[in-house]
Image 1 (tube, rainbow, N blue to C red):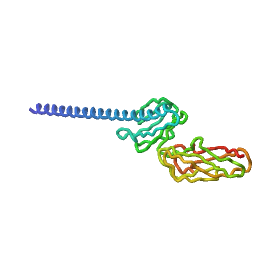
Image 2: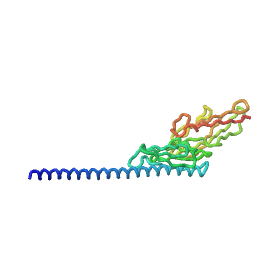
Image 3: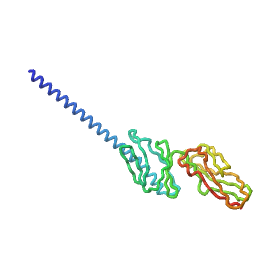
Image 4: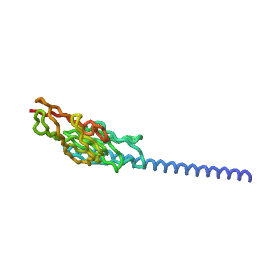
Length: 241
């Protein structure tokens, strides 16, 4: 009798161990499937972001110089996963740390000044003479091409000088100054996104005839944080008669 009871106890123990083993295996398989499902969703989200960035760049590249678009990308991928965006040659690269997603573009002539994540932030991609540039959710003060103007300049006489500026960025700027020849400052209290303004000053021509250089600096004190700081200057020449 005792032997039978002992055997029954062993068989019960084996059954319990086997049941636990089955439960553990089922749990492991469920976890694996769940992880695979999460990975697939993260990869799908990364592919969507890479495709969106590439499509915006491709559209501007096809439309040509002077065109631009705004676009946004998520702060994080599915499941609160961090990621980074970079552009290498003609490829958009999304790196989540565990894997990399690549998307081909039709151009490799792309410069990323900065790129912000988060749907509440706007990035801007634009084309200038076939050069594609991306700027982020900041003001972007620029001197408008071919906007430098002057009245007739005569020796020792007052002349009128003007230049056009624009905030090409997605957001408004704060106050800044425009300086002419390190001597004359014009204060600009605000320049809204995509707003243009012509800045006028009166200058005295030099006493001698000939070429007279004029240097213009926009936000020369760097009061406004911009995507690109190197395009705020213009050097021109006035012919003094």
